[in-house]
Image (cartoon, rainbow, N blue to C red; front, side):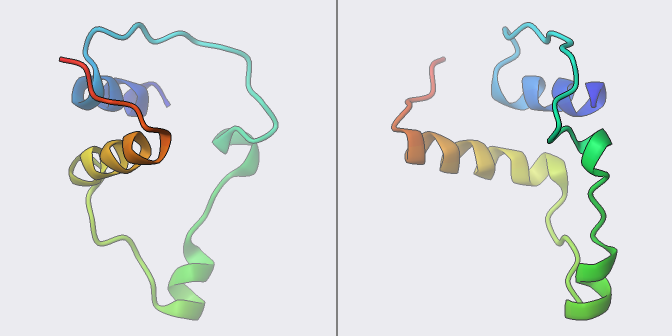
Length: 71
């Protein structure tokens, strides 16, 4: 999770401080997400690499929330 947080920080806002907090019930380590069923039943698998997709996700979230990107 730290690696993911560092990647998001690097791509979205390098000035942000990453803080470690207690796990929540929806934490991925609790849920243990697995895309095996999607691959087996639907033939689906990710086509976009995380580093390439994060900027698109950020833009989408900002549009939905009406938040402008600050420099």
